[in-house]
Image (cartoon, rainbow, N blue to C red; front, side):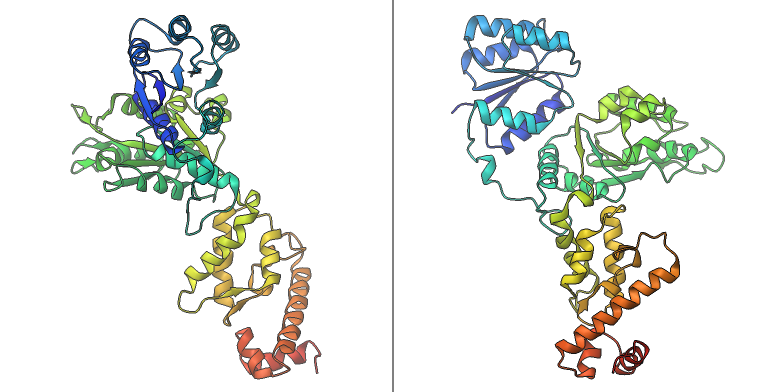
Amino acid sequence: MSYVLIVDDEAAFCRMLEAAVAAAGYRTRSAASAEAALEIIAADLPSLVFMDVRMSRGGLDGLAALNVIRERFGDLPVVVVTAYGDVQTAVAAMKAGALDFLEKPLDLREAREILGRVVGGGEAAPDEKQPIPFGGITPADPAMQAALELLAAAAASDAPVLITGESGTGKELAAAFVHERSPRAALPFVKVNCAAIPGNLLESEMFGHEAGAFTGAVKAKPGKFELADGGTLLLDEIAEMDVQLQAKLLRALQEKEVERIGGTRPLRTDVRVVATTNRRIPEVIAKGTFREDLYFRLNVFEVALPPLRERRDDILLLAGHLAASFSPRRPKRISPEAQGVLVDYGWPGNVRELRNAMERAVILARGGVIHPPHLPPTLLPGQDGKREEGARSTSVHEMEKRLILRTLEEMGGNRTRAAEALGISRRALLYKLKRYGVE
């Protein structure tokens, strides 16, 4: 059976790409040097080779190995991969006979496209893969499913993962998704909120301290790296970390060891790091508040979560799941009118805002149906949160009037049944009818 050969001196990158290739249904092998790759190819010809350009092991780099492959193995497809991508390297690779040229951090969608084009369908064709559940639903949005596929592929490796996206898109939940699907799932999942802890305390929180290291340190305390040993460490909102502390974090990631504040010996740690941020890291780097070398270390595998406004197919799925979670004993149905409001709204606060809206709606909808007036006023048509309160109240009252009249019609004019459906008392219904001048 044919296979795909991955050649890279970074073990984490190899494991990440192996997992992605295997998830697409292809068998894999890997080599840490060009020399080792040539030996493997000579013994068993692969269908495709992904080869890093610059490798610290052995005497050959990727371009030199590509020339040897052309001399010995003819037109074997080779895709050159590098973190040092530039025009000259790309031109040299193509002149040497490379099939294609990819840059790190690798976009696995491009890698999978090349696999499908060159190798064809794997043992389990990509189109046959089942949708991946997430956050209580199985997202229907293609962009969200693509992000989940990348996260699932990354989970099988130890490669660092950088999850980006607007506030409220579910980055922390995505980090937990990676941990739960990884070989480390039974081991600790430890979180550090880099934005919530002051800079002078964050170092102690992450790396720990010895007794007497500073005023108030009456006893030794292990840091999050030690607590997460063997498992996964989530560095939430990492772009908010002080730039001086970033240097110590970079060393911890590179050396796989930490030193407590006031300590005299390094402590070995085996930690898989997942970082999240709602900021554009290249812009933060340009401002001088984030280290570029730390960024390159963290984004071996970068995954961007789409905002909710770009996931229209998922809004009602999420809303229904959230409504059920807030009222498990008495499920609430979302009326067609309320569904229209939810789908049409822009959701600047993303899933977090939707969660708050559904919690409010479930509380207000004492009957079995959620109607537009049960939703926050800012969601309703014409309510942008900036109008005068009188205008907002008039709009809501008009919608309430229409809701009452429609419910009465559905109940054949029976006011008692209409009040029960609306989740209000019969006396309250009579008051509202009088208020709106309804006979």
